[in-house]
Image (tube, rainbow, N blue to C red; front, top):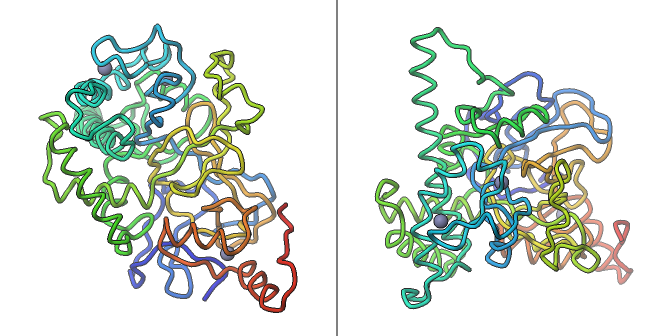
Length: 393
Ligand SMILES: [Zn+2]
Ligand SMILES: [Zn+2]
Ligand SMILES: [Zn+2]
């Protein structure tokens, strides 16, 4: 086995799908990782530490229930109470997101569901705390908008001979006319994943394999899918099977968004809006794949799906790391020098945990055990009765 291990599962695919951005400006490419580990991403040139690898806009992201009354449902940035939706009384939309149509339309498609989830007398066990359910509803709405935008773009380009604001780093950018998306594009190259990237994620061509979900996880998925059927807007309806399949993919490929500042000394725990200054953002700086359990004291804020960022395999001594920028985009950068052709890896769990704890979380959340060089070293040390190496402390 190689240096790293990811929940890629379905090895044996003959072709490597590129990240949705097929642009040559990105210093990475998809490849079939050695050792039957499915797909990974590798560097296409020598990279120094801190090199930017990928910046991806969220296809769909939702705050945890505890943050619903603190952040914008569109960009997950701090947002005050005056911007709360009068109909559902739940979601907030910040001034930037409100400028465009995307955030409003996304919310329109989930507003009724949120209102019903918030109403206790209609709960039937359903609450806003069902973040998987809210992410599923949001993902279905986002997919609908992406499809519409792409259809419009295709129509426009066939009648005008192409062009437009699209292009970017390669993702579909039909929604770029929206103010919040335009702002994130203005801040630098960004991959805006669209329907195609989502379809690839769903098909298993991109990101982790859902074949390995534990039985109790599958049971829970079916339960949430039934709730989705009951709550989803009529125009977003699909089969129970499709809800289940989507939930499974979101579970293995979603990212948990965590706040930049440790909860203990950050203002975030008070819910203060002091951070809501233009250009400052909430200060999201760390993001770990879903289920990673946060990163030492960094409070989890929500979950999101970023298909183009789902292709990085895990390592306990990774050469890259992920963080959020103030546009809720995930930014992946190298943390050390990387040779051309070397696999690019990120941590799926807190690197400061010991080997046993890391692997327990990896197994529980991603259904694999890590066999990276560090795990091998620490297991060897442990077997020899030595203290495990703790270079990350
Ligand atoms: Zn916003
Ligand atoms: Zn609403
Ligand atoms: Zn490892």
